[in-house]
Image (tube, rainbow, N blue to C red; front, top):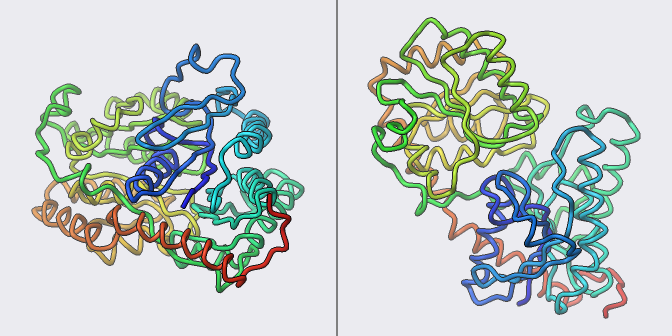
Length: 415
C-alpha cells in the first residue's frame, strides 16, 4: 500500500511527533509499503539548513526509503498565539498542493493536534477519494484557549476530521473516550499505545561519559528531558530545586527546547539556584547515555491535560531502566502505568514539596535499580516499537479493506 502521511514535525527533529512519525514511516517502509510524508523543513530542536530550502515552497528528498515533501513554512519562533497560528495555517495551505503532488495513495494518515493538519489531510483524501486514518496524540480542553471562539473553531475542525475518518487511533482508553465525545465513530476507533524504541534505548552504566562531560560524577542527578512547552508543567522542577537548594548532592538537569525554557532559566537565576543546569536538545545518538546518567527522571504535565496526554518521554525513561517520578494528575495514563509497573513515584502536579520529598528519600533508597528494571520489563512487554508500529500498519490496511468492501461510503468523487 501507498501511505501518505501529514504531520508538521518529522526527522531530523528529535522529540515529540517528529520522532514518532519518523519511526512509523521507516517501519512501514521496511515492511515493504510505499510511504510519502508531507511535513515542513526542520525547525524545532534542530538548526535548519536555510540555504537548502530557501525560496522553495515544496522541497523533495529521500530518507530511509521514505519520500519526504517539505513545505516552506517559515521557521518562526514559537512565541505567541499569532505566530503559532501562522505556522499551522501556513502548513495547511502548503500541505494540500504538496499532498496532491504525490502519487495517488491508498490511504491518508494524519496526526492531531493541531486540527489544521487534519483539514489538509481531509482535503487531499476527499480529492483523491481514499480513506483517512487519524492518529490522535492529544486533545486540548477548552480551558487552555484564550477565547470561546477559538475553542469552538478548533472543536468544529476536530469534529469534521474525526467524523470523516475511516479509522481513528488513540493512545489510551482515556484519550479514546475524549475522542468519541469529539466526534469519532465508536466502531472505527482503535486504541494503539505509544511505543518506545527498546533497541535504541537500553539500560546502561550510570557513571558514563555524559556524566563526566557535564561534571555530574558525584551528583544525584534528577533529569527532565523533552519539550519545555506551555502545558508541560515543568515549573514544578524549578520549585522543587529551590526546596533542595541546601543539599549539594542534588543536581537538576533540564534538557530540551521550548516556549517556556527562557522563563524557567530566568526563574532559576532570580532564585539564585546553583543546582539546576540547562542543556539544549541532545542528538538522538546521545539519548541512551543521557538517560542512563540519571538517578531519577521526571515526567511533568499540566493538570488540565490529565485525561488525555500521554507523555512519550516516560517510556524512553522506562526503557533506560531508570525510575520515573511522575508529577501529574493521578488519573493520567502515565501515572497509572508507573503504578502498575511499580517503577517510580506519582505525585500531584502542583506539589513541588512532594517532588522534593521523593527525591530526598530516593537518595537513600536501595531499590532504585530494581525499580528501574521493573520499568524496562514493562515497556518491553507493552510498549515496544515493532509490535505497535505493526498494529498501525494493520489499522491502515483495515481502512483500505473497509473502503473496498463498501463498509464505509463517504460518497467522495475519487480522482
